Image (cartoon, rainbow, N blue to C red; front, side, top):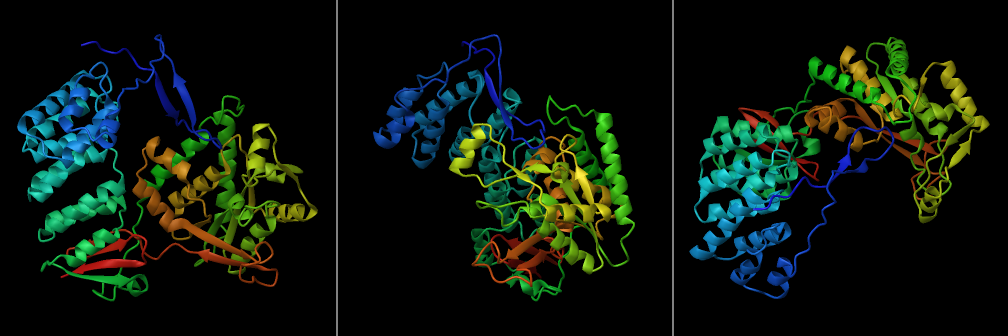
Amino acid sequence: MRRFGQRTIWKAHHAYIAGRTPQIVRLFNDEAPKKEITFNPPIHRLIYREAASLEKTFDVLESRVAPFDSKGCDTFYHKCLEESLDTALFHRVIKYFDRFLHEDETGPSNGTMSSVVALLIKHGHVELAEQYLEKRRENFPTSTMHFRAYAPLLEHYINTCDFNRAWAFWTTIKQSGVYLDKETVGPVLVSFALATSKDGKMFKYVLQSLAELRYQLSIADRDSWLKQNNSAWTVSQVKEHDMLPACSSCGHALEKLPIQSDEYNQLCQAIKLMCMAKPSSLAKWTPEAKTVILNQFEAWLDRQHAKVRPGKLHYIIDGPNVAYMNQNYEGGAFRFDYIDKVVQNLESQGHVVSVTLPAIYFDEVSILSVKATTATRRLRKEGVVFKRTRTEADKKFLDKWQGQDIAFKCHREVASDDLFWMYGCSYLVSLHGSANVRVVTNDILRDHIFVLTDEMNIQRDLIDRWKDLTVVGLHILDKNTKANERSGGNDGITLEFLDPPRYSRVIQGDQDGHHLPIAGLSEWLCLHR
């Protein structure tokens, strides 16, 4: 069998570049780029447009071995699950898959693996399904395996009540670097929990796995629980407002999941490494220069935190996130008055406020973020940079904040302003805990979370717990910018702070009961004896 040489690889370049989107980088080798082969006729067309039988379709697919038709296999093996195969055809299609697994350069996709594993189980060849999953992992160690490839086998163990084997297999999946999408994994583990609900120990383990995924029940999951006739647990649906101060159904109170000191330190160091990363090949800031700025930032935070009185909080304000609220329209601007409104509100309650702002906003002229339209996109392509000139009102705000020492200039060359407040928050909580530290922002941190999980090896559960403990959301109702908003205060502006919930919206419980949140609803399932 002819083996293909090293392929030309396209991949997303995920090295952290502050303020820039991931780039697509092409890696070249000595060989000419290999063109993607188009097979005619496509297997999908044979099956769904021409209604060819599986046997006639396979006669075509079987001839494609140098290279193998990966897309065709996806379609064909999925179709095999929907129809009955006689013994002869079954052995032919499995023999062809075996060649695909052992001879092809890239091997079968996760979709094909999932279909073949399910097909083997359907025909009673469970051990061969196990072997093929292991073989794919061995043959293609750099290829990401998705849970969907393993799901049919785990579901088989659950459905046949082989719970010890199911748990051992699930443990292997978690330890093998398999990509676990909670929306795919969750329903399978819910079925596992339902099946083991009378086995206290196993049931607890499965619910812990669901909690680690931070999975919330779908409506279908909820209905399955409510329909189950199980004497082990009393199942009831409880409204969110009936969960405080304790569940109205069982009397147990929900908990706020804590973060240990070593976890805070781990998170803080990871974000600091992100700050220290070189933002671009043109950056002149050395690690030593960055360290000086970060040390100044830490000293400023320490001065601010020393002002916090007992029973009060230290709020870090994500300045740009607040200032650009309600401004996604033509003529929108960076609203310094919004920031000042937040500062005054919190300080009037006795709290300490620290504002992080890009250093450029202290200049006479600064870059302005504008709404993306056809016109602005065209101008950006032409190299147009949108700027704004600082007004006298802006300067008064900045002078006041600097005079009070409550605003820090975040130099883009060191790190993005997002990383400054992220580091500031993690720095303070690593020293003082999260009891009196908060961040005001609506930023969901999508790109930063990707870097933390995929490059810094920080567990997503830790990030979610950190956000649940510290992040305060904000709504600014401004009748001066949106006529249909409800009226604000005397100046037309009303603030609505969205404090962190008093409990973690994640599956939790003990041997006497469990609470499972329902996605999209302000409701929970309560399971108690």
